[in-house]
Structure formats: structure tokens, C-alpha cells
Image (cartoon, rainbow, N blue to C red; front, top):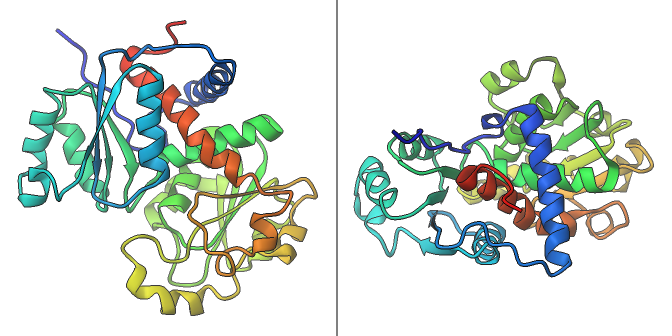
Length: 307
């Protein structure tokens, strides 16, 4: 009898040693691609990509990754499938998982991904929900590892909304054993249950400069995530003092890195001086979505390297 499918819905679906090994594998796959080595462990495998939210980096990185691995990716949107016409999530999961080898879902409600995974025969990957964005964190952690080594014991500042990126950084602090300081205005805190679960590795503060003090990495995200666009004006006022600028970066260590999952709004959550400056690694971070997700696909579909 076959084993149940292994899913990746949050970072905590990985063990600590396994997560570090996955980052090392992503770096190795990146090097193999740069060297022109042909490696196709997913020949004849198919990934269904279900998008209920718009995407650039998630779609391109998963689709290109499957092609580079010798497989194929299918783009599915609610406009083109029964998912948008009221078919139960459970039924879609039962049908799709009999035809494809894995499913990546990018949607609003995290509970929908959980329901899909519960009825899927094949691995389900969270490509972003309102609660978590774990694939982005794999890329972020790979990027830090490439530039500065192991993040264990380091200090990270997250400045901005207590959103899905903030939640995923809280999980990352637990998994990779670093200190996280979250700076956000009142009313925009991360979920209390996740904050409790994070324990001493995560601290909530109001002053972004205090969060950034002696930090090794400073991270921010847009103030109004997808689904919150109607709140843009209200959020702009609430977050007026949370723009990551040169003053905030000056509070961090001199060699601190800056990250943003993109797309960015220069002049809002980050100044052009910072995102385009020498401490910013956002372009490496964006590229690493490809390599980190290839390592993840390899792990979930074939159990690890075949080379």
C-alpha cells in the first residue's frame, strides 16, 4: 500500500535538519543550472498550479522549475475550471490528484489549502494564502545562507503588517532558530496564536528602529496585501512611520541585509534608497524562488537528489 502524500502547507511541515539540507540542495541545484548540467528527475511528472490570486514570481518559478526538471506544469484559474463554478474543494482534490503528480495552490483562505490536502492523493504545496507564504521563506533563507551563512542565532527584524509573510517569518524563527523582532502599529499585529506558539524567539515591538537594532536582516512587505486593497488609505496612515529607510537600516548591523518578497512600492513600505542600495538582496531573493522550489519539488516527489 502506498504511503500518504506529503504536503508543504507551512514551513513547519519540515524538520529543522531537513530544512537546512533543503537550502543546501537549492544552492547546489542553482550551481548545477549555472554550469549547464542537465538534470531531469521529474521527467513525465506534472504539476497542477491552481491560482485564485494573481502571481508573477510564484507562477514563473514553479513553471520554469518543472520544465528544467523535465516535467510539465498546468496553469489553472477559477475562470477556466470548475473551481470557479462552485465545485467543492474536496471533489476538485479527488479528481486532480488522480491525474497529476503534485498540486500547487495560491488562494485567499488557508483553510481551503488544508481541505484540498486532506483529500489529495498527491503532494499539495501552499503557493500563498492569507495566513502563510512558506515558499517565499525558503527563498529568503536560501538567500541569507548564500550571503551570510547559517542564520541560527542571528537577529531578524520584520517591519510592517502582521500578515502572511510575518507569520511565515515567525515559523522560520522557530525552524531555523533565530531571534525575530516584529514591529507593527496597533491593530495590525500577527495572529495571537502564532505569536504564542513562537515563544521567546519572537518579540513584538512598536518602534521599527528598536526592531532593527543590531539586526542581521531587515525585512518588510507591502502594507496592503492582496485582498486588502480597499484599506490602502487607512493602512498608509497607520503605517506612515514604518517605511524602511536609511534611518531604520542604520540601526541594524553595518553588514545587515535587506529583503522584500516583491512587488514593492517604493516610497511606501521601503525607500528607493534602501531597496536599490548595496544592502538589498531582493533580486537574489526573487531568483531563489526558482531554486528553492525545485529542491522542494524534488523532496516531495522523489524523496531527494537522484544525481
